[in-house]
Structures are given as C-alpha cells and as structure tokens.
Amino acid sequence: MIKYIAGLLSGVLIVTGFPSPNLALGKTLLAVKSGNKSAIAVGKIAKDISVYIETTGAKNTGSGMILHRQGDLYTVLTAAHVVRKGKGFQFTTPDGQVHQSIDSSVRQANNSLDLATVQFRSNKSYQVAKLGSSQLLSAGMEIYVAGFPAQTIAIRSGILNFTKGAVTANANKANGQGYSLIYNNATLPGMSGGPVLNDRGEVVAIHGQGDRAPDGQKTGFNLGIVIEKCHPFADEIIAVKQLPVFNNRTPKADDYFLAASESYEAGNYQQAAANYDKAIKLNPQYAEAYNNRGNLRYQQFNNSTGALADYDKAIALRPNSTLTYVNRGGLRADKFNDIKGAIADFDKSIALDDQDYLVYNNRGYLKDAKLNDLAGAILDYDRAIALNPRSVLAYNNRGNLNYHKLGKKEAAIADYNQAISANVQSPIAYYNRGDLYYFEGDRTAALQDLTVLAELNSKGWTGLMAKGAIALEQRQAQAALNYFNQAARLGAEPIDHHKYRGLAYKQLGKRSAAIAEWQKASAISNKLRYRKDSNILQRLMKLT
Image 1: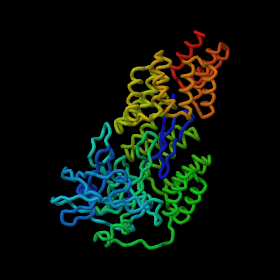
Image 2: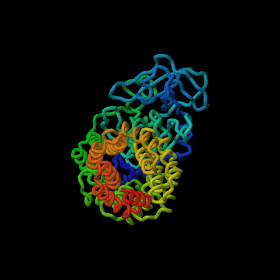
Image 3: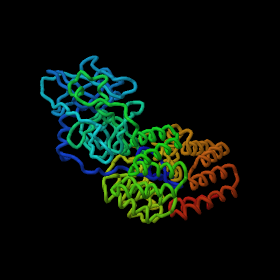
C-alpha cells in the first residue's frame, strides 16, 4: 500500500518523508502587520476590480482585473497564459453581468513577460484598480491575492477567493517569464491573472504561478509579475505611466533567493545552495532563506544536522512561521526519529494556522504509523478532508488505516473512491484500491484498477507492480517476478513486494520460496500492526 505525507516547501516542492509514506512539509508564513486598511476593506476593493474570465467554447477559466476605462471601453489585465489559447472570452464583472471580449483585442506583452490585456465594452460603471509601487514591498509585509478558482466538487465556478499572506521576496531581477515577487498566500488553480494587492488596497502585481502538492493543491509558494512590468506594452494608460520605472540596481538578497528557487527547479542544487548562501550573507536575518537552505540540506545533501540548524535559525528569526515548524517536524520524524518533537512542531503550526489540511494529514500519519493512535489519526484525517474535500492524500491515508488496521473494507473503498474522484490521474488510490480488490478476491475489479495504473505510471514502481499482478493473472509468473523485482529497485513497499513475489513463486511451483517471501511480509505487517495484511498472509501460507 502507499501512504502519503506530501512535501510542501517555501520555494520548492519536494515529495519527502519516511520509508513508506510521504510527508507534507510546510505552508505559509504569517505576515508582519504594516498596513493602513483592514483585510475586509482590501477585500472589498479586490472584489470591485476583479473579473472572472472564461474562454469561449472551452473549459479554460482564469482571473483578471480592470486596469483602465475610457468611455465604455474597459481594459482587463491578466496573465498571458490565461488568454493564450483562445480567441474569444467572456468576463463576469462584480455585478454578475457577463460581457464578451472585443474581437482581436488580446494584447500580449511578449514571450518573456506573462502579461496580457483584453478589452470589453459596457455602459455600466465599474471600479478601476488603483496601482501601487511594488518597490515599497519587503519580506514579511502583508499581501493579498484575489481570483476565481477553477470549478471543483467543493467550489462553484465564478466565486471570488481572497487570501491574506506575506511577501517572501521582492527581487530586482525577474525570471524568464517576468516573475519577481514571491509571496506565501494560499492560492488555487484558476486564480492566475488575479490582482495582488498591498495593505493599502493598491494593485502591486498580477498573480500567475504557484507550486502544487502531490494531490494538486497549491503549496503557498507563489510568483507574481510586478505592476511596473506593464510599462512596455501599456504605457498609453495613464495609471501605468504614473508608476516609477525600474532602474538597474545592485543585486540584493531577494534576487539571490529567486535565483536559488529557479536553480532548484532546474535541478541545480549546488547552485541553489550557493545562492541561498549569498542571500543570507547579504541579509543575515533572512528567515525564508534559512528555511529553504535547510530544505536543500535535508532533501538533497543528506545533511540533517545542518538542516536542523537552519530550521532552528529560521524559527528564531520568525517564531510565527508555520512553514518552518512543519519542515522541522518532518526532519525530526524522518532523520532523528523524534516523533514527540515532530508532533510538537505540527501542533505549533496548527496553533498558528488551523486551516492547513496538509499539516493535519501529516500529524495524522505520525499518530497512525508511529504511535498507533488510530482514533487521533482518524480525527486528523477527517479534519484534513473537511478543510480540503479534494485531498487525495488524506482520503488515501484514511482508507489505508480503515482497511489495513481496522479491517473496514467498505469504508476503505469509499475513501479510495473519493480520492479517485478528486484526481482521476493520481496513481495512489488506484494502487491501493486495486491491491484491496486483489486480495479480497474481486480480481475483475482489481484488474480494472491495475490496468489504469499500469498506463498512468508505466515506469514507476506502482505501475510495475500493477504490470506484475496483471502478468500473474495471465499465468506469466516469471514475467511477473521480473516486474516485482524492478519495482523493488525503484522503492516499492517491502510488504507489497514480498507479498506479490510469494504469489509468483507459488505459481512457479516453488512452495518454499513463496512461504519465505510471505514470512518476510508477515514480519513487516506485524511490526506495523497491519492486522488485515497479517490475516491475509497467514491464510496464504496455510493454503500453500
């Protein structure tokens, strides 16, 4: 089976964790109060200037803001990737009215700047955004993002989402698509193109990029294009002309922070670490840089002591950082087997922000796998699902607990079904549901799941295990054994590897080898208190 703890890090997305599951690391940083308006006041401004964008004849949606008005002609600013694939668009304005875009009015900046404007006409009066200078932003300052998440089971289309967060970095030099502002707000797919506002209700950037967790949810690491970047293609608009123009300036710590994030995404970990070193040298108080360097030391360089020192320093500098508490908790559990300390870090993160479903998922995993506190784990998984009804991770983990420890087959199947409904492309639940069906004797249902899985993840260990199980059903035991061995080399769960290898040896007529495999699997299941697996393995050995 697969259990998941998903990896969320500021600036990077890493699937991490323990020998079996994967742990969700981190989320957001709390802001330092610095503003002139309340969040409610800024939220009203955001609502009045934001528009919902739909591509005519397609399911693509996005967000934008009203940048300019001239008579009945309105100009909407958005991210270029929101309007790149369509010719016609419709805008839903704050009053609920739908307006068609003017033909051929899309004006994209260029390939190195992910900005575009689109126009529509209306004789109604809509609020135009007030623009502010991004050059006044610094790490820790409050920042707000508004946008319209794509439709899901839990979210109807066209509902404005408004989130509060903090600036992580404000670089002078942008990346290849013009992004230079980094912030940690919780955003969702579909919010690209929406306005990023400062604490005075002024638009300082356009939201456009965000990392995602393994279940598709945004992690709280976001990138925006600062509003001054509009100059090259919207300079006829008075509001833009009044903004200051960027001048070439000496690189600052934020530039190295952004460069480090880019290096990480490119897989150049040594360069990423060097850039974090430079950021810290220029700004010894840079908590986020310590956090991310800790991630690199933990995940890429196997330097647990150095990673712990970086996390401790980040927390000392920013004691309200939910992000670093979660990262340190993951490190403590994974590398130091300090489960008590890890849960204390997760508890602290939840005390600071009780809306992060991933932290509940992580704490639930530790209660489940490390403490055998099944009731506490179920409560945490339930809370994670309540916060995010599309969490593949939490459904999957709760399903595994229900089946392998509590023996609740139907409840487990219901959880796996929900996980698949949330993301039909995720191999996790197909693997676990297929494994359940296989050993419960419903081979038809099992093969349906395993066939889907073999296509979804043909080169990963789950796909190879699926191919092996399919080969067993086709009486191709040696081919199945080969698949299982390949899966083991890629990190297949030992209990599953031995369980299926035993079936292959049995089919080959090698009774002693089959029982030896099942004895190994049984020892693991007993240690992990997988009651259901222990019963299945005992039954297999008796029947062989």
